[in-house]
Structures are given as C-alpha cells and as structure tokens.
Image (cartoon, rainbow, N blue to C red; front, side, top):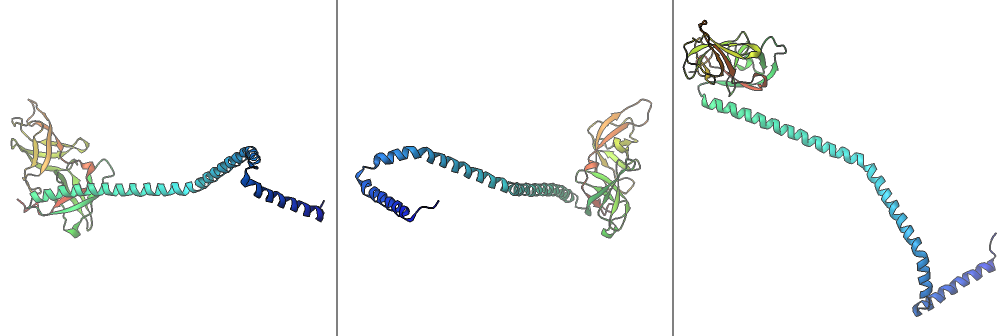
Amino acid sequence: MRMRPDRQTALVILLLLALLAGAVLRPTGYLKPVEDFASTILAPLQYGFSWITSRVTQVLDTVRQLRAMPAHIKELQDTVDRLMIENVRLREAEVDNANLRELLQFKLVNPTYEMLAAEVIGRDPSNLLYFITIDRGTNDGLAEGMPVVTARGLVGRISTAFPRTARVMLLNDPASSVSALIQSSRATGVIQGEGPDGLALRYVEQSEAVEAGDIVLTSGLGGGYPKRLVIGQVDSVGRSDVEMFLEISVQSAVEFSRLETVLVIINADTAD
C-alpha cells in the first residue's frame, strides 16, 4: 500500500528536523548518552560484521591460492628438474675432465708413444667373449693388433678394425695372451685371460721369488706390446713340489667393466 503524499512530506520534514536537532545538540554534549547507548547496542553487530568480513576475505584468499597452487607447483617442479639436469651435466663434465687429465698425464710421461683417444661405445652383450667397441677405426689410422691402454694400465688390443669403429679384445678374454715380467724379480712369463676370474701369469718357474703385491708389466718380448706397460698386481701365488711352474693369479690394474675412455697406441712397433 502506497504512502500518501502528505504523509511522505511529513516524514521528510521530521527527518530534516531530527538531523537539524542532532547537528545543533551534538556540540553541546546532550546527545552523548544517546550515542553511547547506540554504540553499546551496535558494537556487537559491528564486531560480528567485521568478523564475517574477515573470514570471507580469508576464504577468498585461500580459494585464490588453491587455484594458483598447481601452476606454482609445476613451476617449482620445472625448477627442480632443471637444476637436477644441470647438476648431472656438471658431474659428468667433472668425471670427463678427471679422465682426460689422467690420459693427458699418461701421454706426458710416455712421450715416445703416438696415441689416439677413443670413447667406449659398446660392450660384449654375452659372457662368452670379452671385448669393447670404440668410436675410432681405420679412417683414424687404427689397425688390428694395436695396444689399447688407460692411464692405469693395459686394456687389451684391437682385434678387428672397421672404418669408423674398432673392436678391442680385453686382457681377460681367454684368447688373450701377453708376454709379461714381474717388476721386482724380473721373472718372465705369459699373462693369459681367464674370463670372469681375471688374469693368470703362467710359465714362471717354481724357483722364482714371486709374492703377492708384486707389479706385473709387459716385457716387450714377441712384439705387439711395448715394454713396461702396467698389467696389474700379483694377487696370489700357488707353489707345488710336483709342478714345474707357479700358479699365479693377477689382479688387473684396469676395471674392464668401467671403461669409458681409452688410448690406442699407434706406434707400438717403433716406440721404445
């Protein structure tokens, strides 16, 4: 039901009079009891409204954060992945640098050897043959029979050379044999591969003074390998009154399963 015009006018006049009275009486302090009463009544409502507003704001902020969280998590994961890849690269570079420093040092102390560095790109997939494949071949000047070494010692020799790659027979292959000598006693013999059991030094007479820990070197006899390349250390010595030769087990100086970079001696036949 609509308010009549005369009542609307009267209400407007009353509101104007109330505002005018408030404006006049407020400075005098007569309205303070009324204001205090109104404040007491309205304070809980104001507190409640403020509390509700604060909680609503918190909920809205939480919702916004939850919406942004997947993108933030993905950003953090991308950063972690990037740092991990970078860390792996740095570690690999450090390992490569260490290997190259060892090979360079070996070349410096063996200036008469003409050597070519090569990376190991393949290994024997079976347990019947013991060889690795390197990324150098006849196009790089490699040929069958060339010795292969690391800074630690003798690895083996090239058994087959292709234009871009070559196969290296490892010392522990049963078909491998190298003329050798014991550094301390100068006793000579032949190193033969024994597959997973490592190396054996054969044809050393029972009368020779051989002990565990003795260093075994290439003797240079028979050609193919230059003198004084490190083969390994005597691991054990077996003696018998009824045998002509000692049974000598040798631990290779090279970890064949961990080979990554090797050196091929190009001029083994002419080097001192």
